[in-house]
Each structure stands twice: as C-alpha cells, then as structure tokens.
Amino acid sequence: MAQSERISRDYFAKLDLRVGKVIEAQRIEGSRKLIKLIVDLGVEKRQILAGLAEYYKPEELVGRFIVVVANMEPRVMLGLESQGMLLATCGEKGKPLLLTVQDADDSRIGEKVC
Image 1 (tube, rainbow, N blue to C red):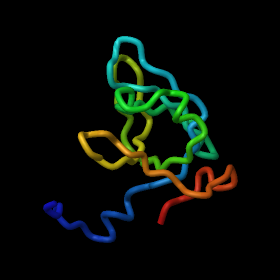
Image 2 (tube, helix red, strand yellow):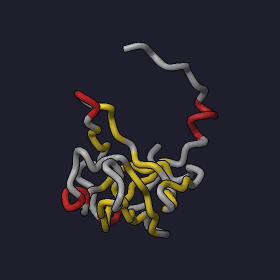
Image 3 (cartoon, rainbow, N blue to C red):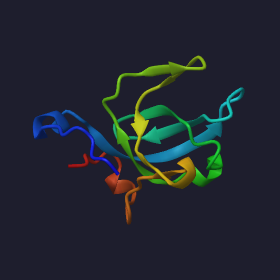
C-alpha cells in the first residue's frame, strides 16, 4: 500500500477526534448505503450519516463506542445534516471496519483521542 502525503503534527492537531457512543441508528429511507446515527459526545448529541447500511444492521451499531471527527464541517445528504464523521478502515471488498474503543464505558464518552 502506498503511503499518503505526509502532514505535520500541527496539521494533525487540528483534528478533534472524540470517543462517541452510538445511542440510536436507523436506515435512511430512499438510500441503499446511509444509516443515520445519533452519537453521544458527552456535551452534546450529534447526528452523523454514514455509508454503512450495506454492511451493518442499525441494531448492530447501537451501544458501540466509536471514534468521531467532531470538528468536520456539517454536510447535507438526502436533506439530512451530518454533523461529524466516524472513522473506519477500508476493509476487504470495501467492507468498513469501525474504529472502536476497546474496554470503553460511559465515562469515556467525549474523551479526546490524542
């Protein structure tokens, strides 16, 4: 695998990566790919749209502790606003593997990834 362009530590420091807990998930009507997640980030709950529907059932996502890019600019898709981005690998045959926080509990919600 080729390495991407290198970035500075200062550039990386601009990312606000947080631990979030998926508290709700549902398929978006009219979309083959999108699932709407409600993610608890501690100080607020965010709606995040993710292209996971071909690989995960919504009920498989609820309760997971995921890594969220909390300072992404909001984006509107199918008339719904996505207020962040979750991190996942680009797995075999395109199947995403969510980056999750092992051994996390509710006390970790909102914690900054550093």
